[in-house]
Length: 346
Image (tube, rainbow, N blue to C red; front, side, top):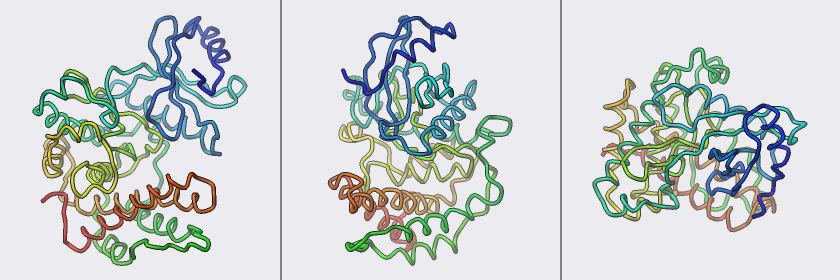
């Protein structure tokens, strides 16, 4: 299999550090759209290598170090995560930062489902609640004194959010096509500004938390690991819950996550997800409508960026069109919350 990466320098580097002598059984894994993910064995030990994409961005190496900071900060905690083995920051080895972590025994509910889950609706239901509980445990983790503390910015996290993402949206260059069928977001933005909650204590945020970024235990309704930490930061963890709810695979569902698990049926409702989170977390979920609206708005702006790149030939047209439709759905979801027409808690 062509992995698009020469593992010989990695093997030599691992040997020099006494981690292992040989790399075998290397294969590309699905998932992780921003970075390459390669499963391999080092002297029979099953590990996973993560490194920047084939065409890296200027920030790709910093993103790798951000992920390493997250996994290091989670070590010894109750947050289910892959255990970090080693990180290489020496660009002379591979001309990029990379790291290895232990392979997690679990399945991604976006592209597969275990026999046990397929056969048992109660397990599927409980797994959705387990996802909410795992997120709550993450949200209660104190970043103070951990590597993630270095990602905290001065000032109010929430104060920055609306203006930041409005700025990104208004800065998009659609060219001759214009914004087209993009809905007016003015009322949503006004509502978000008028109803912003008070700043809570800072916590570690995953930044892109949904069913496709967890691995589930194949035999029990438990989260084996939360994965893909490239967007992690220190901020308001309730935005992670809002993100999960905006992506939850039940109507309205502007984006597809957990497709294989959702297709089998039996997942808890959004309200039940909120209740499971609140029962586990020390944080209040009273303002979850606002966080879900902000999450939908932010996600829509991020996805719309791919459509803008597609219009100028910098991304595949079909991918851009699909994500543009998702962005429209997310803007509409946020608008419905702002208008009082829909709530994830009802």
